[in-house]
Image (cartoon, rainbow, N blue to C red; front, top):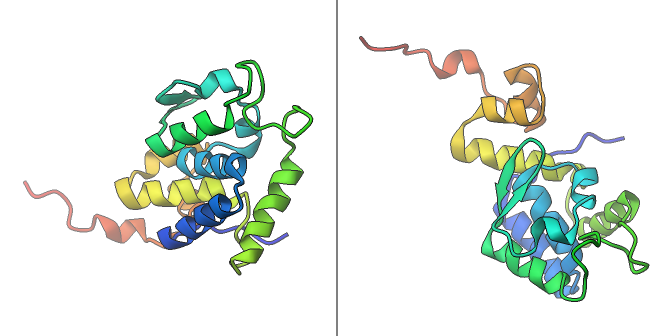
Length: 175
């Protein structure tokens, strides 16, 4: 199996979102949006119920609380229009919890249609979240905690960033 990479380019993320919209695959778009904006595992996303997200500004997980943007909240309203609060947010046509395999194939089709590299997969979503969080905040300790990783080097490798932490703070503290 090929190691997956984060989606580093915002333009690529926008192309993926646009193709989901063009194909009217709003459920899959919401799943993608939540994946890249929370860093939650696919299995945790698929367990979400409508009541976990409807009319809420935050998604509360066991370990973390995530802000739901207007774009995500609007998608939630659209896809939960005829769903009961006790139903799965991401469900199949038979109203059962969506299975991981169908998500993998659906995203693989999107990536194939956009001619994206083969190392981009559903597993890239968490890494995409982590990569962009690091680019914005430079907060490795949070990512290390969130993904339960033992060292900074493991976290940097996870998000595909080559940075020598020994050189980063070489100047020291000026007293």
